[in-house]
Image 1 (cartoon, one colour):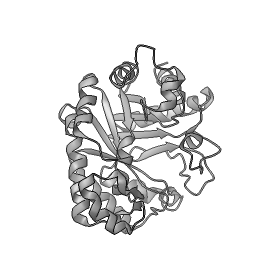
Image 2: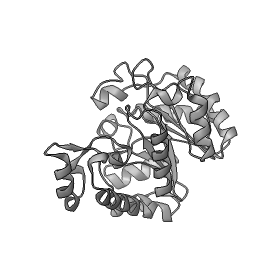
Image 3: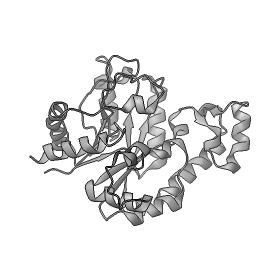
Image 4: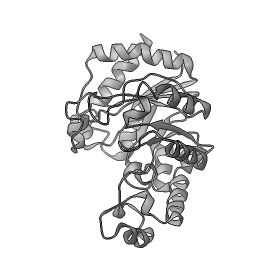
Length: 294
């Protein structure tokens, strides 16, 4: 089989632990990660979206995972222009950010002193070094917000991010459909291809303002798919409602040939199930992996 790696967007979710997917002996974080790495070759870390990671945490992940295992890391939300909790920043950076926030609990990138942002970037990348140095760092996922509409300035910002983290790999996910509209799709894919930036193909509910169509395209040597589920509550602010969905086998069978096509066009293909409620993602990831080798 081509180099297709299937995994999930979490291994620590509370509902997953409560689901019974882990055996009784996997009763602490170290044992759960070791068990997960025996089931899948890939995982996505989403906690880094909410707070800057710690280097000792990444070092522990590297120590507890086998050689060849891959961690994709979701970018800290501030860097992708999401509202970011002031309390999520390191204590020594908060005073300057609190001033920019004007007493509000959240702050936006545009309001933060560039020196503070640069320091946050340095800490974010430094924390990932244990993974990079051991060959376990996959891609840094930049998932942009719903209001990040297509435009020249935003394309330039994407390039700025890619340059900042180079030579680390990035991948780009949009949550605004203007990037993949019929009029803009070819231009978006050309932009990503010209700069060798992997496009994140998505499976997600359609018909919402944030809905991006399930375009399948490899724009770089790495291809990425994120399976978000098809919940009828995609616009919910409750994360469990938003991603609570177990793909029926038929829907996975429809995706299997699409993944194989990506694998023919790319050197490595990552498929990540983000329908993280109970063990839905883990069950679906195993099902798809089995379909791809059958």
